Length: 639
Image 1 (spheres, rainbow, N blue to C red):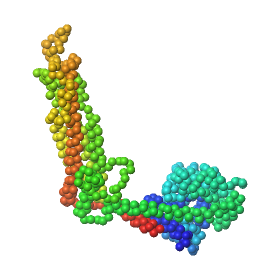
Image 2 (image 1 turned 45 degrees about the horizontal axis):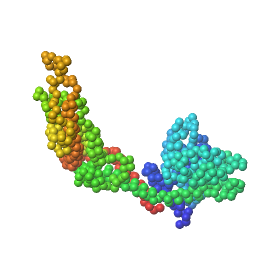
Image 3 (image 1 turned 90 degrees about the horizontal axis):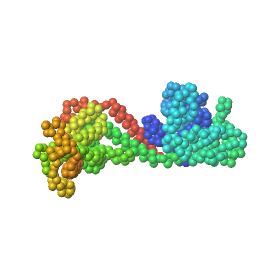
Image 4 (image 1 turned 60 degrees about the vertical axis):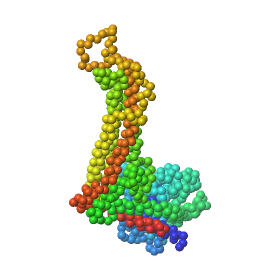
């Protein structure tokens, strides 16, 4: 096979691949190598394309004529020139009819004749006068909308253009008029937004023959004004006057060749100018580009096949008997919940579940998921919050009053045990609302995880499974609340100072047993005696703290803080364990049995297994996608 035949075959197969994806609405899923033509309305873009084809086939007129992307597949074939549209089962031999069909098909999808659409038209053109090549012609760029055009026409055309040129495998042909300032070219400016260093952009310079005398584009071709890796190619097209007079493209191509061969500025390198060179270069570039991207395309297509197959398996490719369906759904949701909570290594128990290939992915946004969220809440967030809780917000005067009230009528010479216990209970009770809130937070999280994992194709069964599991989780949550309350109650009602970490009084060096507690009756002042006719309704200690009172208050605060810290450590150890065991593990371990009893044995199993219309549509779409991807994969492997 000759080099040219090999190039043509490769490009033809890429066209077939493009058709497969376009027909299945999958053209945006894989970035195929392609050549995209952009340029302003007045740049001569249509004339460049017609020169490449060698035929008049594009509609002409005032304003935007190309209003939908045109995927132009040029295919070398001996015999009579003809064209075929993908949307129409007809062979066109008359190219005036091709023009009309482009206009008609455009108008079928766009009601406003001044508007544009992103929906492409695919045209295959067979001729022995073309080199096998594929080009995508886009609507001409405009800067200001006319009175009849939509106000957003400028941005709309740019967005359509970017849809194609954003493809990193697209070669961009930026058409610019040589008679205008190249540095302000609309097409080059748009290309730069996606190809910053102009590595995949080719510049086409039109209207070279219309430049002022003694001016040329040599500096542009040399890259002195704008540097393109693939360079610029100058061409000469027919003018409006020549088109109206009926000048043939074949004649125009001969005149173009003569122009460059005789022009003083270009004749030395005339072989690198004109449409003939442009055809050859584009074909070579596209061929090489396809070859370069084939391994990446095969890998991408294979990934799509795996992903689509997995999604199809999850939706369910085959219909099972109702009981089998329910059993499968129960097993699936239990397995997914085990996977979500226990993760990849079953850190919390022996419920490890084998991972499927699609679950092995890198979490690039650093977001914790599944069981990691539970673990972080229990062992990081909860301790962090609890460690910021401080006891003894009372003033020293309040504590003194508490001590005196605890001593009662007998008073107390030494350390007040009952005051210590009362303050300790109050302090430990500060933990209660937060421990109970933790149970609720974990309950909400496993319910959320469950809803993420219950994605059955049967809506009624889906709702019943979710409802049943919420009941199970709620029941276990209530039992966990009772257990948490019991743990807290133990540490509130039984204030024990026998813990090995409890501070020793003698180590504090605060309390002096020789000090006597000051009594209220001792504080009457001689200079201002008070008559004890009766005791006031509200009686408060008015004098300042004595040294002995201050010492005892300091001692009690130290002891309460010691007990508070010990209890906090116990709670931080036992509460997460209680939640993990009674709420999380019991729920997961009991899911299968609970669902079996509440759903599998129910009388309305058949009703529950009625499939939703959205699931049927999704399955059909996935089957079409899988079929297209397999065809594409086989085709690419043969390249």
